[in-house]
Length: 157
Image (cartoon, rainbow, N blue to C red; front, side, top):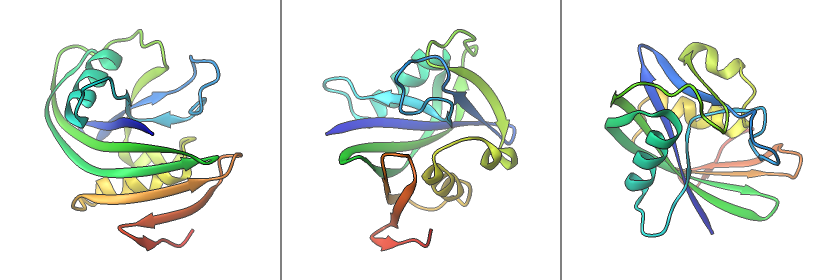
């Protein structure tokens, strides 16, 4: 089972987003996503998000919250994404990330970007400051969202 972190770093009404265009054979290719990645041995969700943010952006998170867990199912494979947002950081933003291009995007412009359909659901949950949640997202092999379940209750698609 794969465990990852995903973090939305906020500044002045914008989230720092990554346009995933640099890695070959990337399930996120051409999509806009937050910052994050796979756990390393012995890491907690907080350890992982701090490391991934530093590695991908050059920023050190100083104020962040664990917001929820997203069970992402694609072609029978399950990934548990530990979802965070961050409102404080130090350091200078890197310009040479090897996974994609980093850009500050206004929150009101996010939903127009190419992204996973389920990301739109949890971005709304982050924006409404919903308490800790569990979201299950099931996709087919073409990347179409087949099922979304929030805190054990199916959502309309």
